[in-house]
Amino acid sequence: MTDVAPMRGFSLLELLIALTISLLITAAVGYVYISSLQAYRTQGALSRLQEGARYAFEFLGKDLRMAGASGCAFSTSANALNTPTDWYKDLFGRPLQGTNDTLAGDACTAWGTPCWLGRDTVTVLLADISQEHIVQSHNTSGPLPQITLDTGAGLSAGQLLVATDCSHAAVFQATGVTGAVVDHAASGTPGNSTVNLGVGGAVYGYALGSRVYPLKAATYYIGTNPAGEPALYRLVPQGASATLTAEELVEGVEDMQITYGVDTTVPADGEVDFVDPDGDGDPYLTAAQVESVAVPGLNNDERWRRVISVRVSLLMRTSEDGVVPAPQTYTFNGATVHPADRRLRKVFTHVIKLRNR
Image 1 (cartoon, rainbow, N blue to C red):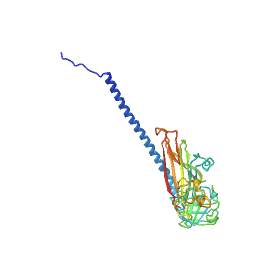
Image 2: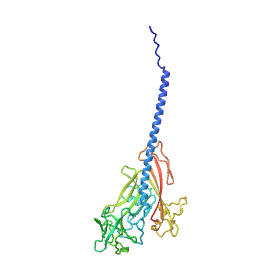
Image 3: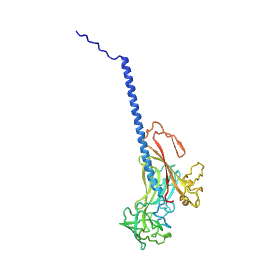
Image 4: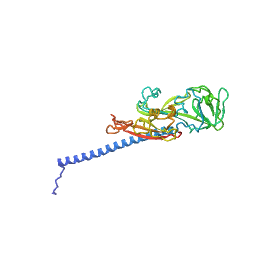
């Protein structure tokens, strides 16, 4: 007979050692996988925050840069609207203004939409020169004065408009739009107080080649969206009655603080000056400080017209909790905050130079 070699197996000790090594390898692979997954999730969340901040700055920057734009320079102006000093009508008086850390009772809480207290707001008005309409004729006689344009595309009844011939500018409401013909009767909501577009209610006719632009007015603020998340909103007049309507722009904007670079030289030289009323070493002023004696001017309209640049700081946060492994301490607006949640937060700051100053 042929001898058969006896079969040998693993000892219990060898099995335990092999099992231990396998568990260590599995744990290491799992740790690497979980770490990679967490890093991927964090990077994805950070990318979304950056994207949201870019969108927010695009909206804000486009309007702020053009604050007060009227199409071209003018020597005289008139506002034919009822209550022309309402914030969304006051292009010539105060095309830029802000509020500092809104409180209960401030304007934004009366707009019919939730407003986050303690956040700044900024209001900007301008003629939307991207929608230019050229005057063909202007009938100023009769009970229904009319401006005939090259085209009425994009215009509708109730819209607030700016007319200019680079000598005189006027703000009025289109009480009717038929084709390329725009009516501006003494009616409507909020309505025109007069059919005349000249200074002091005098008759003024716009000649061939004059321009008409939509009046763009918006107040930017931080509100709460239907999902309960903070978001950047803007309030704009819309529809046949120029009804103030809230529009959500960017979700995840938890806080917005806005400060202003001001020209305090008399007479103004168009350059930002270092002015530091609170001694914090920061030349940018809050909205309350713009309206203080630190800025030259006989009234707040004159003080706001001295603003040369706007610095916007946004605190962005993820909508998802548990993005970071532990609560993330952050510093914003001079305060260090220790949140209870594990959302990712990031501060973004952008300085915007105003062109029409």
